[in-house]
Length: 199
Image (spheres, rainbow, N blue to C red):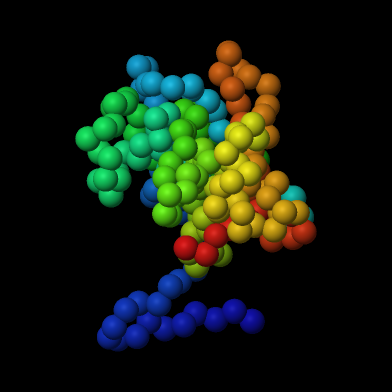
């Protein structure tokens, strides 16, 4: 039987179960479009379905993405290469609530490779945050591209068991109006659960 823990009268408030308020409080109009009309690089669409362990859609989740631009630069003050950023028509961050069938959709660009720890290079990827009913904290994963030659040497992909790597590799779908479409479904629990990172 579930119970609600009372918050202490002093100190930090403990983590509470996240409620189904995403569609009302957190997204903003156009939040799933990261590109302007003059963005550099290859425009792409990232889609997917959020499902539970039985494959049933989750309609009240929210998906966040953040990524580098086509040149491999993050539009964030923590990226020490800020002065080198050329593309100011790309915001690098977006939010999208899932629809009635659990689908999300983002318009973005294919990111470039980014520096890793030491002298390593990370393969092009899109970082994903997932919020949902009953989660105490967001879940974090990545979408990699199936045709990237850098995947084999990516330091993060190298930490994942080989049989589970496919859960973070997006599949190429049929282009729409000439724009490449990539799909990554996000699955809570079960045999084919998406790999989520402990960050």
